Image (cartoon, rainbow, N blue to C red; front, side):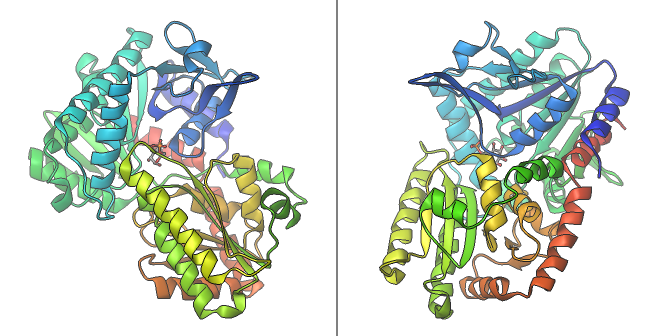
Length: 485
Ligand code: G6P
């Protein structure tokens, strides 16, 4: 297993005196106003947590959007604050946007154009020229914020995700010596889908300002290459994959992200002695079999399909009625977008309908917790759950699946994982399902709940071994290595 210390040594040796800069939409720490004063919160899981983990070990600068109600009160006049409190290992520089910019860039172009364009879930992307202008100007703001801190310093820039596709080109135009790596965390669609975007050439041109672009899976790399070939007529080399455009080479690779195995293990130590009493205490119910689902409420996560699967499972395997409970933890997300508001309502309706269909005086099958819960708590619930349901319809990776596998007790937990997640190629020993196949997945749920302990131990240990070896630090080293080689 690669340790944090190895990553630090690797960075010091290879990046020497270069300043390390991460550009990302979501900040890992927010300050909020509460009746008892300003509080600091760690934001819920995702790529920013991975990058926070890395920067905490190697130091540097993270540029992100300030989103907490007290964020502007806690940083200096340039938006900077040392984080995390008590550790102060790197500088977080917050960019503050006007509401219109946030609407156009984040709620608009990033999440109603690119997000549905890149996920094969049959939600139509919206193409709006005003959002596109905001997308350009916020990418420019990121560049200004970075250049303001760098001046002439040599730097290694790590850009994260689809909110910042234009940033590599803007930065490279300002300083061709900057080393720029980009990680695209969501799927890259097939060319037949991508080609409908009116700004496809600009997006590709922006990304090709990078020296390296990482994707989670090989088919995302292939789709990206095809788009650049069709739209920009680039020269393509396949070993290793790279595209040459305007006399500049951009290397490409699939680098599936890992998670911080050790950090999770440390959290689990705190909850070593937990039992069903924790669920009774936190949610007020008893159970014989516990299934869990943890997601942002997002139409890509297949939450409606999952509820239908539970319904069919209880109908078909009626012995489980009265014994089985599905705990769904759904963090509200992107709630100013109608598709997300509607999905929230749809989930509440369906949960109510299924609960009404099966409930008895002292049992109901589904508990839907519509809020963000502390990470430590979720990891503790994972330990207790007999099954974790990850039913995403299309997903770049899905870190929840990986976290569950690490947390689960070997002899009693089993992951049901959608084949359409990037994680499915890494977690081959779980039960892989097609979330659109309600009948087949209800059967798989039954198989998971009745699987012999020896079988679960064998499967979980295989996956844990893989996750231990391919952890976050392994991913970090791979990413940097691909850029500097
Ligand atoms: C996905 C994206 C991330 C994003 C996360 C949470 O995992 O790849 O870039 O941060 O979703 O979405 P949000 O809009 O809440 O940041």
